[in-house]
Image (tube, rainbow, N blue to C red):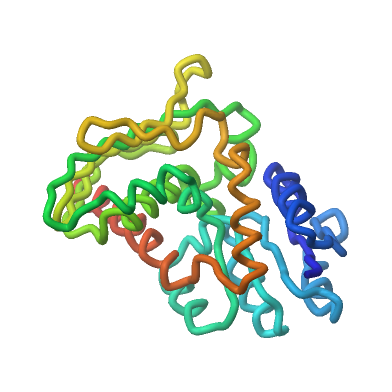
Length: 266
């Protein structure tokens, strides 16, 4: 399969490594150095089988729509969009997938087998990482472009919560700033207390996902991209499988609700 990559930032080397590992071929890498609209020509390349979107989050939707209409397979980094209405539109199109690589983690796969609909679960999500000034000065520090903390950092874990335990029935957002947030999510058989932060000292960074007192460490790295789970994403893609927009929509909608809940509270 031939891949054209749109965006050449921090995450691009992880995708390049994964594509090479599964025997794919990168035929183009597009960034704004070649012009803001260069991607429009790249997706029309008849040699391109799959368009990989690694741009700022606010650009995902337009590129995904155009690439799909050009007949390409689409793989977008998370979040697929920062707008649930856009995610609904993408759900009507063919062969669009998103990267939520924690679903492929061996511990997640095993944990999902153990979860019973008749049991009750107490869940603690404490995701606290260190991000430098460069991070905040980039598009990731611009909420209108990134979707803010809950999309940038939280989407992996909110998706994981829904994937493992089901949809949220009640929510509350207790605190929310550019660098930290906290709240509660309640489902049919679970209660999840969650904290997010990008302002944690480097020495005490943590990614805690605790279920009924058992801690599942899905990553000991500073960034989830270092866990090599992207390889599994591409292995699925080559088999015509992956996480479709209808699945991505669930956590996108939840993030929107969490933002709205804090607005109503304040």
